[in-house]
Image (cartoon, rainbow, N blue to C red; front, side, top):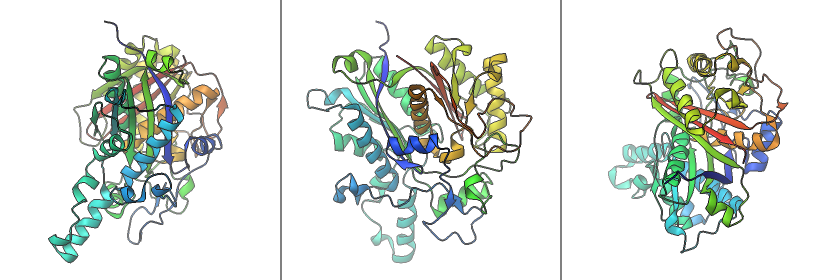
Length: 412
């Protein structure tokens, strides 16, 4: 039996650049930065005091207030983005199809704010004051669990946790399940909410984040020689994947086809990528092989591009090893220069950008690029976006622990 085709029929986003696809995409087109000084907590004594926060978010504008009370912030993001995506797809999840609808939404860290608040309750007020909702609020699978409950989706239900590759792997594995006939529809993507004192302290101690605190908007500068670390972001990206014939039969609009997926492990280091990018390169090669296209046919790459000194250099090496001379001709930008790094949600947000770009004949920029780095010498679409046709787009995601994921979407 031949593998089934998988298409994208709906998209939803909750991001620092806008809530909802339209406002988010307009910010990408306008090259806006979402980075500001953190307002959610007292940043005194913190090494990094900037992030891409989602301001004034109230999930009860879209979801029942009683339900929201028992959701961590990352679950709220996922629930709202899923609602947007389902509405965008026009899919009605009836009892007749509910068993064929799965939910796979990843998160790299899960309910960090719940963990912090409940630990404070334990220390200050004792074990009897820890909430009975603590565990179901903080565990990473609860984004998928709550979305499933809210929408009566009874198919495969799980969360994939692979650090910053969580969303990419969630989408890729959801597509594989549809290809083999395990379900017809997937609500899939990633969610993250780690702009909290504890999480920011941990990443700050690792010296992974930018300390360009005096000028937040320019702090995320992928591929630039003066980059000094990533800027934390938060939010969720969710897409609706459907088996092509099922989508066609119901008259769904189709944004594109998910034609390639690759996943590998570096087996190298807990935080650093393999020094020559071999694992990342292999993931890209796997995605190209599944897609059945040559490297030269890729029209645009949305890079992992974190703005850390090591990642950007190693990713550049990996792309060169896969694409050869064509690497210099393929536009490759990092939209984390605008969104910040949404960790486990980044792969979904960036695949949405690929799909929007493909449908708009638009090549998003890498903003804040001021000083070329000779080790990052590919076309990163510096500062100014371009018009350009995209037939096939690749999105890369790499995570602590050596997790690599690459996705390819194409026009249909």
